[in-house]
Amino acid sequence: MKQILIADDHEVVRSGLRAIVESRADWAVSGEASDGRAAVAMIRELKPDIAIIDYSMPVLNGLEVSRQIKLHHPRTEVLILTMHESNEILTESLLAGVRGFLLKSDARHHLIAAIDALLNHRPYFTGVVVEKLLHDYLASKKDKSKVLLSLREQNVVQLIAEGHTNKSVGTVLNLSVKTVEAHRASAMRKLGVSSTAELVRYAIRMKLIGP
View: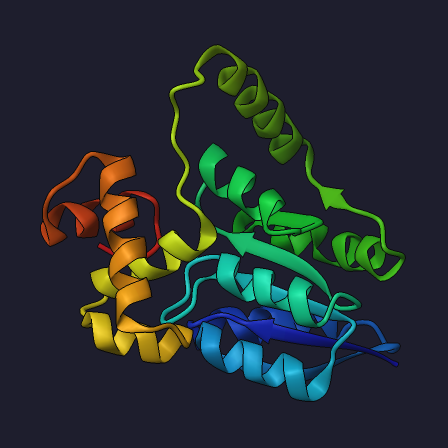
């Protein structure tokens, strides 16, 4: 029996995904998580074959969850789900080691095929996603000035945008306050911003948090 974990902060989405997964007699949902930190803890305990991870989750977003999975549980394959068509999200997911990527609008028709592929350790991207990946690659060749934040900088920005202090960000990410301040300053420098409000606007634009 193949074990699959579902992480999404919307219960209705988790229920829909569970119904699709459990339509296969040889698959079982081993756990559900509603935020990124809970997802990491469950994966550590349950060691599922597949983790279906929503990109936009509170506390730790899908990219950080994916990074931690690939670092500590490399045998667990990751399928990122997102409702946003974004070249930046796709690129960052690939950099985090994600080998499966689906738009939520495609999940009903492609989820089973995506899980099948990942269970056989093959990547899965829909045609729309591949087209976006190619477009992003070509655009990056033309625009070397485009700056992407590191995963850790994105985590810090997300938590700050969610209202956390530097101290509480450090607690969540297990970093010192000094390190959090360094990541925050680095992110602000890369983005060319000078205030927390501008960081929040960036986080909303990149779908790290809801508007």
